[in-house]
Image (cartoon, rainbow, N blue to C red):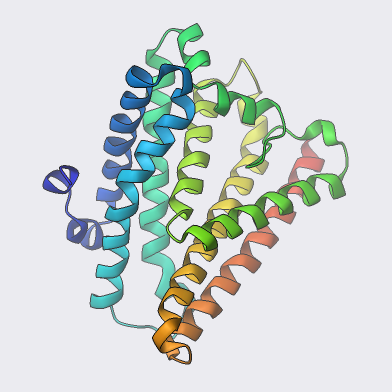
Length: 255
């Protein structure tokens, strides 16, 4: 892959800041293809091309980290660097979408990124980020937990498909920040929306870990590595649920 001549997986492992640059570069390439070759479906085409490029690269990063890194008994020590790499990649993609939205004429940006805009204003399968009209704590929690289960399920079924979920949420965040003042009072929505993004992020990671664990279980079903992965995925999922509930509490307080 040409990108690997600019950014090598080993560099990302040694210095996670390269993951931020990776997200920006892949997002600009992917969205450019979507905008200029598939303009009618740019919202989804861009995501597809970003994911196609990111999955093999990030898979190499995870494999490199797993093979070279020391196995810690501490849950956070085992997962913090991978979470940081994915998180910086997430923000890199968001930055690219933010820039595209600001650079393009408003009507063009709203046309090209219509699916991300819909996610900000209406319920969608992968999230609903303006939920004040739901009115009560329980409907908001139930809605977001449904999304969390779907995110984890998709990540589990497709393995590195967690990258698609992370990329989608990153694209929504980029458009969200770039378009504030037209759809939302930005500052007011930061606390609960940020928590929701974080919850879905951990859910995607949990699903990805589970998928990798069961993929290796063909020959090592009872291995320590397998049970560590199951434990880590469970911890991440529980953390995601706690964050989603906290986000609903914050949202009710604000609205």
